[in-house]
Amino acid sequence: MSFRILSALRPALGLAAKAQTLALSRSIPRSIAPAVSASKAFPALTSYLQRSSGFHSHSILSQAVDQEALSEEVAEEELPTRFDEIKSLHPNTAKAIKQVFKYETMSKVQSEVLSLLPTDSDMFVKAKTGTGKTLAFLIPALETVMAKTDKKVLSYGDTATILIVSPTRELAQQIAEEARKLVGPYRFNVHCLVGGESKGLQIKKLNSKRVDIVVGTPGRLNDMIESVGEFRRQLDGVKTLILDEADQLLDMGFKDSIESIVEALPKERQTLFFSATVSKQIKSIARTSLKPDFTFIDTVDPNEANTNLQVNQSFCVTPYEQQLPLLARIIEEHKEKNPNGKVMVFLPTTRGTQLYASLFEELTSYRLFSLHSKKSQDQRTRTSDRFRKSRGSIMFTSDVSARGVDYPDVSLVVQVGIPSSKEQYIHRVGRTGRAGKTGEGVLMMTPMEKSFLDTMSDLPLVHNETAKNMDEIMQDERLMDKLTVAKQAQDPDMIHDAFTAYLGYYTGRTDVLTCPKRDILESAKQYITSLGADEPPHLSESFLTKLGFNSRGSKSSSSRGGYSSRGRDGYSGRGREGYSRDSSNSRDRSPSRFGGRDGGRDFNGGGRPKRFSNDRSNSRGRTDSRDFSDQFFSRD
Ligand SMILES: Nc1ncnc2c1ncn2[C@@H]1O[C@H](COP(=O)(O)OP(=O)(O)OP(=O)(O)O)[C@@H](O)[C@H]1O
Image 1 (spheres, helix red, strand yellow):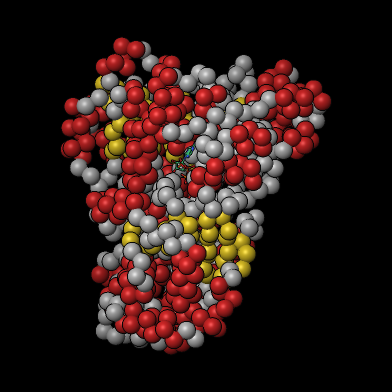
Image 2 (spheres, rainbow, N blue to C red; image 1 turned 180 degrees about the vertical axis):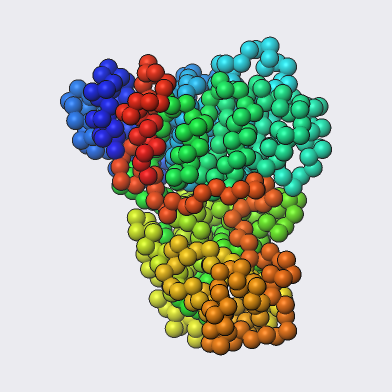
């Protein structure tokens, strides 16, 4: 793609093409040698860099830039790999990296971004999960603040200079922690504004302490902007706005909130978008929020999957009655090899998460955690902290933990049921294999869900080895006895709630399910009986209608599948929300949901963009059809 972009631009940009190529050439990875020299400081990441060394190889680039002179330039320039090679870094930033983080070598995305310093250019950065994006945006933002803010104003500390928007509370808190470590030597202060915590207390802190960096979730930030005049004033000082997990922010329906936040900020500012995946939706907001001459950095080779190479990924397709025993066996086998590794099990709904966590209480002696949006913010924070510090534990979680959250030493990620999109699959599996470590990912599906695999053809999933022994697993009497006891111990109400949640989730997934809709009802019945229900709960006509099953459909299901009344009221009539998908977080949602999904196609799927930026000498107008950003926006 870089080839096409350059070719298209060359006649139009003339000299600028050279500048573009220079920018592009900086995106060439280093050869293996420098990575090896850095191996003492960061061995896991170094070995990752080594494994990825085919990534942006010189021959590919030469092919892309089909002019000898340009190729020569390209061949000569290498990216720095060590933080101390970034000479422009403010001494305090360098001090924090060396003394607080104790990092010497940079990850790929860090070297791509930091080699551009000093810069106040807008950026859109795509890099794989767990590759150090947080510092890759915090450092340039801090450097911009130091370069652009009047020293006197900085010394007062009464206006925010950096605003970071994060889709989930957990991620916001994690970013705030990382930012606190980075700005320690500056004595700057970081405020974390998330929902679920006392707004009054947050306002009090904003009024009584220095305000330098603000990290928050869109809901709470907007609330503060709308209701706290002093906070609006504090935002007048913002030099850099960062949208982390930009993709998810939109996927969660935060478009309106983000637009309001952007409106409250000074127009003259730097804006950074960071994400491991780039969907169609994000391009629309990038168009209005980034300057037309923004720099786009993509550290993912288009010929390579968007997941980390060092994560072994597999899938299995089994009926529900086999899923629980198989999950138990997969975890058991993994634990034998990695007794101290952590396991994360993702479920599509909150209710399903609660039920699985409860079943495993009876099945395993490992320390168990569960995290989902039905927990209070306090509980979520505590669970998150404990899981982070624990060893050899298992967490059952909804998508509140899917993105950005950095738990050390997660060695296995299991996704039970299809995720909401291919992007979500990538983010969930990205909780393992972080900072160059190895990991394992398993996607468990039922025959109804198998069609989801069609959207994942570019990812390296193989048949799961453990699932090949299904017959033997089903004859494991010890396991089966334990399962029987575990199922009998479950609260029928919890099972019923998981059932309605299941229906709500899967009826919303007809985009990938190729089966007739009524099969979802059948499947829900199998799901629920496999988890301990004697028979599926009764569903009222109104509930079925709400889910899009017409009465004929429900009757036919009823006659085939036994949805006969047990005297229970249908859930819809009781105003229960058991079926809402816990894609996130929370009460931090803005009321409107934004757009549809992009079907899981990666933005650069067919091409080879690396880093490119608009010609700075060019007009900032957006009328030129050869404009880089127009090409960026016109691709899927
Ligand atoms: N230069 C470095 N050297 C060593 N470890 C690093 C370095 N940079 C970041 N890390 C560590 O790597 C891990 C992943 O970093 P981070 O959470 O920033 O990744 P990410 O790319 O934002 O991931 P995600 O896409 O999941 O949000 C963290 O534990 C972080 O402390």
